[in-house]
Amino acid sequence: MPLIFTLAVILLLIVFISVIKLDTFISFIIATVVFGLLTQMKIPDIGVSIKKGIGDTLGELALIVGFGSMLGKLVAHSGAAELITGKIVKVFGEKYLTWGLALAGFIIGIPLFYNAGFIIVVPLIFSIASLTKLPLMYLAIPMLSALSVAHGYLPPHPSPAVIASQFGADLGRTLILGIIISIPAIAIAGPIFGSTLKKFDIKLENTIFSASESSQNPNPPSLGVSLGIALLPVFMISFFSIIKNQFADNQIIQLLSEPYISMLISVLAAIYFLEVRRGLTVKETSKLLEESIKSISPILLIIAGSGALKQVFIDSGTSQYLGGLLVQFDMNILVLSWLIAGIIRVCIGSATVAGLTTVGILIPLVQANPSVSKELLVLAVGSGSLMFSHINDGGFWLFKEYFNLSIKQTIRTWSVMETIVSIVGIIGVLILEKII
Image 1 (cartoon, rainbow, N blue to C red):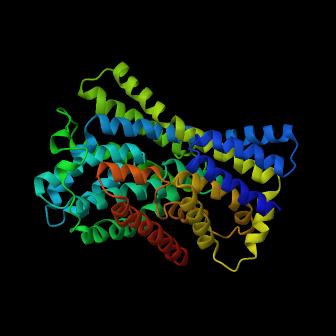
Image 2: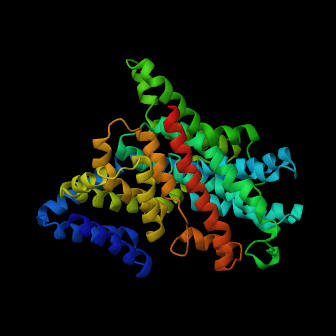
Image 3: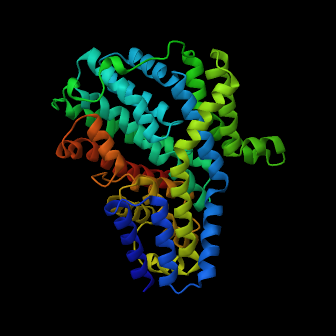
């Protein structure tokens, strides 16, 4: 019965989110209460589980996601993102342009959440297409594949950050391994797959943007400052993750090794170097930071809702039951994790929801397999959560409408790209499993 109840609740989520179009946070809370009642939990216990799940899940994550949103806002507003793209394109030239766009997309995608990154890079893609007369899809897919990989694989993006927290994975190690896997995923799903799309005849005048609409900041920071600020959290989190065990008694090193401290320092650096030094006041900059927090509130609520459902899975004994069933499958736990996340992603549409829902199912199985790399497990779930985006995913429609594609064309481009990212991701995870 617990298995039937679990499938029923996932189906209920699919109906609420994809069919009825109910708010995702509300859908999670309703599904959580329904599941608690189905498993005969006492009503007061359901309430306790919901509060515990939300509190435990958000915790440090609210700081990481919040600071990440602030950093992304400042990188975008200052013109640093456009400057990075322009310089990389200039360095790579037309011959290797798609590789330059992929690199630019990855650098921009690290500090920016996917939707924000998409809105920023799309006008740049149109501008480059107008100047070079190259096919739009040929240029768009490399850049957007890099954004997608960063969104699904790398902390401090919400889904991988939450999954790492729930599994007890080291965030810095997850980031390092994620970057390693990202390289082949972006290369194959981006420039290599993109090179097959030169015959897609999408007219610039039929799309939302024209070249003139890519407005560049008249007073951007320098390239060195732009790159340094965009990549500062990556350097800090990775560096302190490596050295913290060697300085276990050094309280300052231990404090700096906390990911939220790295994010805070990165935001403070961005405030000064990207805004204040260019003439904005602290008050004006703070207004930008307020706007960034408003934009991530729905994401935090979705994460909170998934935490509530996960906790009811655990407190009702269902996670333990499902873990016992999954242990019986003669399948690599990393592949199984990828498969579960992929199935939920195809059914629900949201990569974030797919990844977070998978965590609640997998926790007891992870506890039963202490030797499995928690960091690789995060990446397996993350890559699975990107599988075959289609009509129930907001990203699918964002891509379709901005580039004025038919549904068939969007599936042949966007959906295939996302699937390649997912498959290459799990292959990379399995290769790393043999090496480390």
